[in-house]
Image (cartoon, rainbow, N blue to C red; front, side):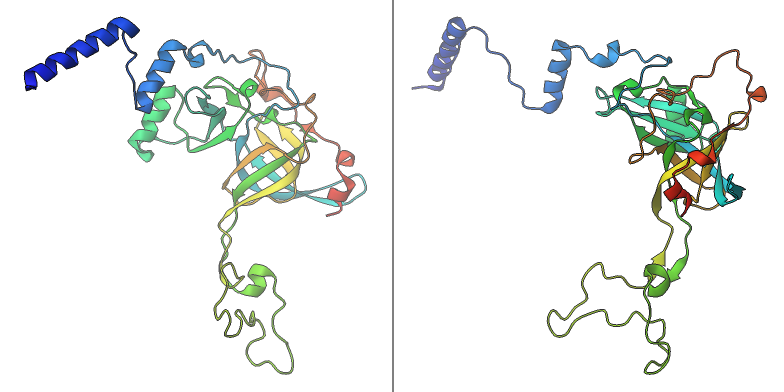
Length: 312
């Protein structure tokens, strides 16, 4: 059979198949084409989603955004029994919502918070374009906080110190102070070698690190001398003592990671959950007629603090 005859029969079979079964649906093998077809069939919810700046009731599964603060230093206070309570002062430097992430576009519900100020010449062009795209001022520090769907806030909403309530517990994350190369006693709390008889110039040594011929090596993860500090640390269940809305300052009990002037990230405690009836949800919205210069600091009663935590 010639090539022309084979081509004629092929076209004839195709025409008969179309007449019998109808026009077949074109098959797509790429994920991009499938996404386009699904988007055409079902419009995205991102177009219909309306994120408004208004207070909403907070449910037991709701999650609020966190905030970025600057560690100002430490001081001390005394409770009504005369016990000394160490206090760390944190400053929420012009926190603002710089981006809203949704499931339809990014795959998660999250808020990107920006803090501080920075000049355009100190940022890269992609960073400047990111801020200009969302219409927010240039920020020095960015941090993403996962939230629930009901915890979304519009871009440009300020996050003030009123976001937290005195008496609640928070988790504070930061970069610990670097201590350089340290030995096993300081880095891991080893007891060291004998300090009198039988030891010569090895009082602070860590001792043996391996075994005999089997396995004849040092296991991975062995605690040995090395660099100490300079890593991300989270201090949990930090008690909020006082907030100052006028200066955007917050006093918390105990120490938080990092040196003075470093950024730390604050969010609601995971293990000691605060009372949802006292928290502003999704955040505290500043009234138009509120005068922050006349606002007084809000202080929690030191007697309300957990006595087991106070005895640390």
